[in-house]
Image 1 (cartoon, rainbow, N blue to C red):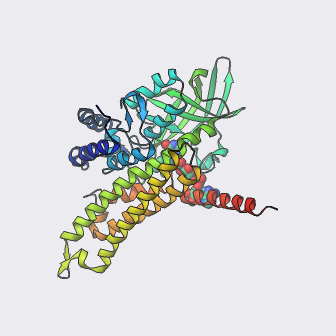
Image 2: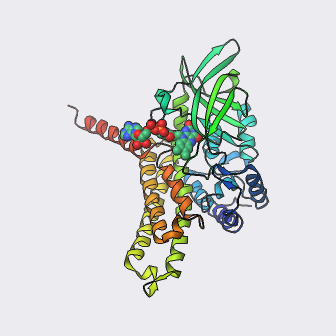
Image 3: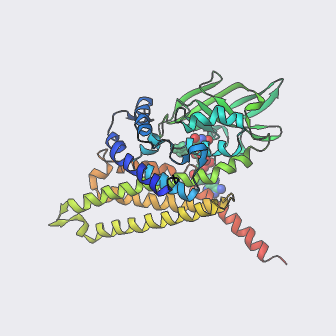
Length: 388
Ligand SMILES: Cc1cc2nc3c(=O)[nH]c(=O)nc-3n(C[C@H](O)[C@H](O)[C@H](O)COP(=O)(O)OP(=O)(O)OC[C@H]3O[C@@H](n4cnc5c(N)ncnc54)[C@H](O)[C@@H]3O)c2cc1C
């Protein structure tokens, strides 16, 4: 039997999301801090039955190529609930990718297998509170420490914006040791990791919301270090580009769906004697949406091809992240505008997509940080080309 192609997998995911997941969009269990655990379990039971659980990782733990992943993740993103239902959501998708690349076989069996099965969720602990001068856009400002004491690493610090920390079973914690940055795999919940509060944020698609967390004398055995001591930032790079790009893929799916809803509205709703779409101002907004969506898709595919050659693709993923997040923001904003009052209401997912993509312009590197790092690259290139 020939293996199912990525297009076929994506088609199955799309039909599952449209037929099974979309009807849940108005479910009262979609709360301010993401869908409830009960709703996640219900959706995942249906995803398993439909054979679309973790569709981007095939039998034997093989990850689809980035180009193939793009097809599947865009399909899963057609509803903001889709990635949660089929286990392509952040931060688990990026964490699974990272573990697949650098975890030991024992670590994979213990921490990766339950994630791929969709039986566990995970959180990535990097960002620290701004008011304490911790790591944010600049990870080198990290204050969380890891010190070796007798038979274990002891971790102390505070983290913030930790997506899904509430309710997760697996954590990847970044801390600095005397050897440099390190990553640790931990079981959650843990008495030494206290969730202070879950922030009220503009977005609400991600399970568990985004938590402020105190880590107080957490003891981690040495075999739970992910990679080697001092290689934390280098290993974080492995996760960085694909995780950034996968956000672009999922939100491209959501923006595509928002555009379908806005188009439906503009073709049905009438004002001043004709359908809205026949007013040039509205028609042009929808035309610009098509152009932005296509350009964003091409950026995603281009960057995916670069990553599929095996390079880190840091520059390309920065370019793609800026171009796609900014384009999708324009698309979401126009969808809201085309739909008038309905666009800002909770009667469709359009307002939510607008809020989610607004947050996306900040996480995984704010637009300005990517542009700044690209400018540094340009300067280096110029200096090299013009050195005597
Ligand atoms: C919804 C959401 C989910 C998140 N999930 C996680 C998570 O699961 N785990 C985790 O560890 N973190 C997470 N984060 C944190 C995220 O990674 C940080 O918010 C991001 O890195 C920016 O850091 P900061 O908030 O401290 O902003 P700051 O570092 O204070 O930056 C503020 C602003 O300053 C500007 N800026 C900064 N540097 C430059 C520069 N060099 N040039 C020009 N302008 C600049 C940018 O406009 C930036 O938006 C999440 C954030 C959000 C909003």
